Length: 585
Image 1: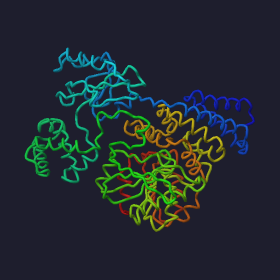
Image 2: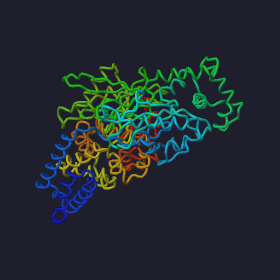
Image 3: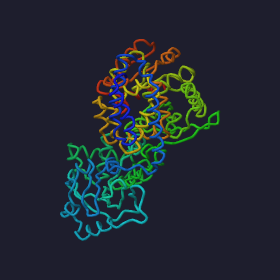
Image 4: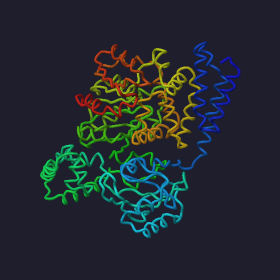
């Protein structure tokens, strides 16, 4: 780094990120230029004690600032309504529509900026009643809440609004809410339509034997549609729908459609995995709990060294077991369609929270993480009475899965590597990565002293409710992943994963990024079980070419490509993944 002006600019950006978290991407630009200059001329130039001192000092300042910033994480409007599967909208005290979610846009004649009185004027709701409800949400709460609240105690009344897709009125609940992040928010209007959780759908399929077409008919019946309306909605004949309804009643052993709808109501009330319409409070403490749609079962194992390992089970409690090892930017939370397929295939995933992630205590020795975790995983299998099973390794979790199979070969039937890391041997593996991952990898490899600064800068974005900026940094050069991350359900999962990773600070992330940026080839020499590599051809983090080269070198290894996937292949290749897993459990 002989260019004095470039060096001074880099140092300025190092300290600028302390006062302005949003300048983190500018720091990455300058740091990337510095790495490129040094590696193209003299890699040893990165061994700069003075520059290292600046990065360490700035990282410590950020750490102290984060400790002082104890206020709850601000809640974005999108987090309040965007993940509601039914129509929902936010109102000001005056009844002005502040935000609408995609289902509301599709099913209601509304737009941002309208007033509630305008969209209810042609409905059964009397103007005086609407005004009274708006007056109720405008009343101040005492004491003021510290996060958004929208539960049965804050509901002020009901309204009927016409649904475009059916031409019929649907019932909506109006609740009083408050949002520290936006003081203009006063009310939440959300549909009282049923929420179909994966477990409810699985019960209809597995227990009653309903087909997918019959389940769709059941959904429409629950919404109040008759046979004629269902035939029109599904673009099929009235005779076909009536035949399907008869089949549904026969399979469920009920006498009438009324009985069917009533029993569905009981089933959904009993199924606590349905996302509550009122669950919008996202405090830091709630990050320790997985989403309620998971029906996950959280446990804690007391290890032989006296430490504790948290782990989660998802899927049928008595299902066929498999071990799941999460990755670096990952967690033990899964997408709804993945959970549905686990239930359908009777697979139970056991997912330990690796030390330093989530709520599991950190490692005892950071230079022995692969061996230490492998022993923890062995103890977990012993505790659950599982002699042998398949191991799913996601992203960086694949390295841990391979280490486990190498140390305890009698416990692992096979490894399913999903977007898994590979040994970093060649320079081109770094140079062709997407920008954010390349910077992190090269820093870990050549200038690890700066890693705490980069990681704490990223953590500050996450804790400051700028997770969307983090998505841009991670997937800026990866079009297929950025497009997938725009899906509200996936973005919510990714945001939760960011918090899962940084919950205890930077140490776990730093340990993993150093590991996956290294040449860990020697671990592969001890592998003797089948290895299935499932990888997206458009992955800009672990390049498909590197995975293909690995598959060609290793015996007993199969490669399963996903042409239209990137690093987020887990989200759109559920069948491929579980098809590879099933023969080994």
